[in-house]
Amino acid sequence: MALLVQSLCWLRWLPHADGGLGHDWSYFLPRLLAGEYHAAVSGIWDTPWFTPAFGAGLPLAAHPAGVWHSFPQWCAWLVGPLAAAQATLLACTLVAYAGMYFYARDVLRVTPWIAVVAAFVLALEAFVPARLVVGHLGFHSQALAPLLAWCLLRPGQSLACIVGAALLAAYIVFSGNVYGAPAIALWIAGAAAVAVWRGTDWRVFALRASAALVLSLLLCAEKLYLAFAFVEHAPRDHYGLPLAESLLTNGALLAHVLVVGPAEALAAAWVQGGPKLERHEWEFLVGPVTVGFALFALLRVRRPVAALKPAMVAAVVLAAVLVLPLLLTTESSLLRTAPWARSASTLFRTWAVYAPLVAMGVGLALQSLSGRARQVFVTLVVVGAVVNAWWASSGPRDGLYNPRSVQAAHAALQSAPPPAIERVAWMSDAQGRPGLPIGRDDGLAQGVSQLLPYEPLFGYRLERYPLHGLTPGPALEAQADLLRLRDPLSWVEPESSGRAVGGRWTVAERSRAHSFAEYQSISWPRSSAWTQALWCARVGWLLVALLVLWMVWSRRTVRSI
Image (cartoon, rainbow, N blue to C red; front, side, top):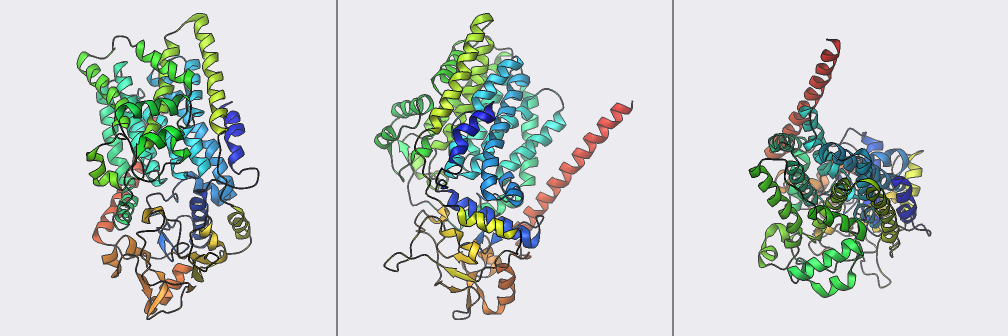
């Protein structure tokens, strides 16, 4: 039923009736196509850390938001980028539903039917589908948060839980969910606090979480190294941070977006600093009924099952999880000057933690009822979740991006090799001035690398983007002993490449640049730090393989006895 409701409510925007998509699909859809091009030439097992398709050579999988190792890219290989977007939305609904169901049933120990209701509430919340509609593809792995909590907190089978949690955490990194990870971490802390209060052994959670964290860091060590190196050489700290003027107004804003929906007028009056946050930044709706039940669950808190000290710690942790997102988005000189916060576009995305917390509260509140009262309120919650999904999806949506060029390129790829990058160019306005129109990155379908790409890490108007004298023209044509293609290694390791950040290939490297322009596999010179990260990743995957083999062998041994 959740899949049906989600299809009726949100799939109508993927695409719009006129064929348009949300504006940020102009970033991700061409990059999914670039991944297809690389796979068509070099195979799916060769990771395209870099691509010639944008900016005359930029990071692809090495980008913090790169989605090469993710479900949408795997779908794109099979059915194309647009169908992959649609499949991702439905997959997120299914995964969020399953994760919350298992968590509520096995960890909170509510009845299966109550677990179904809690799962239904989370599956129909607004944050993830609204992000996918606007084109924020990296947020799709937000749906894994309840499943990750279940792996860390469910009873029994610790080794399998550790491996499962490590793989899920690594996927969150590989899928490019850099902005949603803090909310996931907060949810895990809140889910663990409630579980400990209700009797889960905190030591089991601590052991699993520590082991899974170490293993996941090993698995994605190479991705993390390259992503951090790119961000270091592409700083975006010149915008300022949007923050609410006071804690009181921030709390009122949070209540509005959770209960009523996006509050653009309130945000415009109460949020100051940084760029204006558009409607999609306030899509956190879960509805008045579910929020009311979550508050009811807090009022019905009973004596803890855990010992006094773990219960007190759990209560403090849950309180911190509830309050911290508000503190992180309220005016503070500390936040305005902190290096990690200055480069963030907004910290309001940490409010995504409240949807799974509300769903958990709904489950606990319904479990505390009995008889006819439970039946009535279950019906009320289910109807309320459906109404909220329709209400959230009925708001205005932009369809500014036309995906037809990328769709046609995917279809052409079935019968012909991908077009190599032959030119670098920029799009001009009526006066001949370089412009930044939506859809400019689609040029890869015609063998053109957009010289002024859509790359927010350099600023929304490319304020920090180095051109190094690049002008439009043939990609492999010489300009004073330099080609028009960049050596993309220079974005992450300028010392290893022997050039400035974003530096260009030389004429003497034309053969290598030609291979790069054709999406061929290239071996990149690695620094010692990159080599160490690579070996950490190899060790991590070897450990996972050995642990899986051990679990299979142990299970077969037990069955034979």
